[in-house]
Image 1 (cartoon, rainbow, N blue to C red):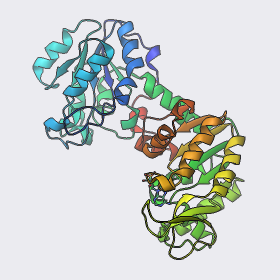
Image 2: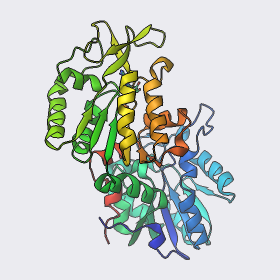
Image 3: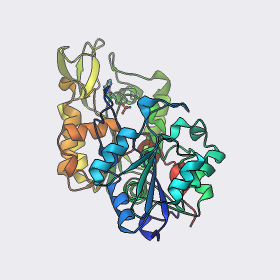
Image 4: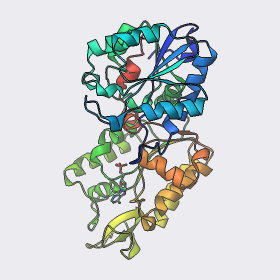
Length: 395
Ligand code: AMP
């Protein structure tokens, strides 16, 4: 793949359109509760400002489904960005009107414009070419810095690129490509993956792909029980996807053929109810009583997984080891976060819950790279070429 990065592009006096992901969380009063997604784009914005560009920002927010919804306006983001970057940010609520062309054509170097939520246009999610062309009229250069949206091929990150000659990845997207995508292909070994979360079904493609790339695969969380069942163990009332037992067997078979170690929990913390207050105890993973739900990995599993992680040079983690939102079942996830943080391997964490887990454990600054993508990160694990990145591949 040949994608140019932003620092390989000459941009002085040019209108640089940056597709960002400002899909930030809001509270009921429309206050932005977390501006990480805004601050994550600062390296790209500052680079453009320092290199004499005019900046036009395009983003989506939530799922307005092609309709104008004031509750999903990006106006508060323009205000917050302006505070952070200490410069005016002009908000344009009708980005594709003819009068907006005059505005973007008469911008001065160093000016910043943020367009209204691009998903207010019905064509956006359909990757409508006409919409892509209309968006492209405002730009000489297109930079994609929205990794978290890169698994979607929409007008503002795909069709638009057909109509702009110079396209490149911003610094955020560059990091994601360098860390997540390239690591999987050429990781320093031993290379391991820790995959957890509720269900095998949502991560089947990721498990199938990653098992042929790694030296070891740790499987925790609710999905581990389908694997334990596939090995003939009784799993009590734990999460089970009966129809995926054969898939679990296939993954374990593939691992064996490729000499990949699969590590499953050897003990679990279980309770009778899916409830933090339900009395809990540790059970061997091959003898879970009928009335028990496995809700976390047990101490022996933590030890087993930790030993393997400590030997690795590269580890990728997606998905919690248990129902970690409940404090009594959060220990496994928390301990794995700490072990990963303390190891000197290249550690890459992606996916909403795993990122929450490393933040909760207070160790995010000791993780080598935290991906900004949920669905996009999972598709990288699946080995897919993301449309938003493929659209930049033309050199
Ligand atoms: P995912 O979105 O697939 O990564 O799944 C994350 C969810 O899996 C979290 O909300 C956890 O509470 C849940 N989870 C993890 N382990 C278990 C388990 N043993 N039983 C039930 N839910 C679990």
